Image (cartoon, rainbow, N blue to C red; front, side, top):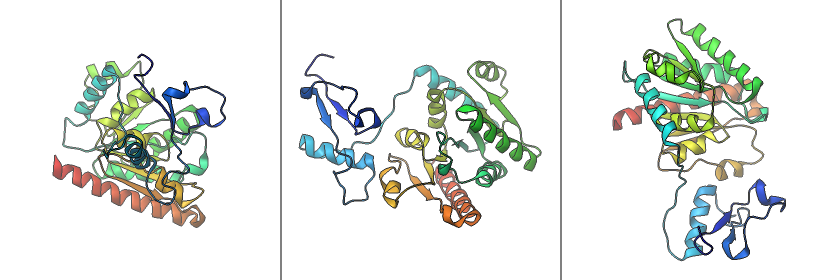
Length: 276
């Protein structure tokens, strides 16, 4: 694009907070004051940006987050979802327990194992992302073992970039209860977009779901203040729910978060079934 045909809006991110990288010339650059604008409200950052744009451009128009995905990833996700839903009208729930190395964001091992096992027992097909790194992969393996031990008839299939095409061609996903994904976030995003519900910790996944119009449950632990729950609430056309994990309660807090998450999952999936 030519100069004068675009604007660069700095969302007050880590990229520019240190002032080390120039973004653009001053004529093409705007700074979103995320700490000052709407400071007295409990609006999400997405809603604040929309309101700020109203003030900036002088007219009201609700702007929601959006996401553009690669067409190849969308096609693969469509084929996977069609097979997962083929044998029965089962809802598909995508789950990611990644926390970017910050264990304070986790609800706990019991929460993760019980959530996946409970959803499978309840008749859902679960897409479980193994996350990034050896530690998250090991935790995911423990969740998978527990889910299969509790549900003896359940079947798990693991896929990555190299194996997913052959699995689709062999029609090997139609009787899968637990589809385990190990690969790029772009294809994970496409899988989220073909799901009936997304559940995850405070990370990128819930915002991807919101941007794609997928209902989501954001399990929020390790927050420094209640304001974080408001500001980082996923915002989109679909419904979302933030579950605050009360870590000070120990195991009781974990159990409470699990019960709330399962209840909201049933509610969202029931609503999706009624609208389908």
